[in-house]
Length: 105
Image 1 (tube, helix red, strand yellow):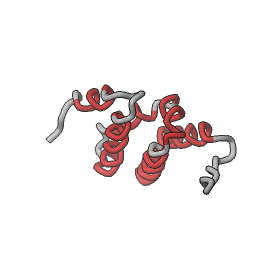
Image 2: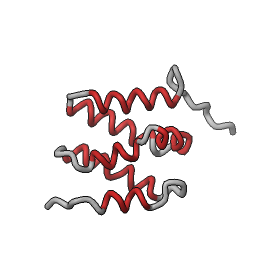
Image 3: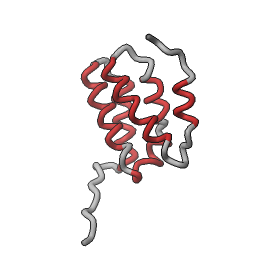
Image 4: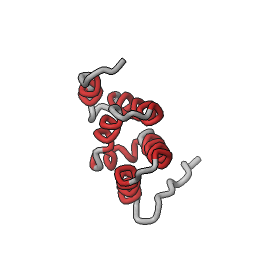
């Protein structure tokens, strides 16, 4: 059985992911940030997106979010670096870098 064709948003996958990153960086709405971060995390589970996520430095964005005051954002952000630390091209270094930062009680 042939796999279902993947739907790519108009403009292409890279452009769509770029729009999500830009929206996250520019919005002041906490709810919108949570929704966009959750969407980016979902895209991270598809190996077809790995190169685009690296190009857009989404892993760095998630690592930056770990220092946010929002528990929800931090919870979403924890999953992506752990997931991508398992991906060979990213190696374990991104996760180690996240753990070397200051710890808060």
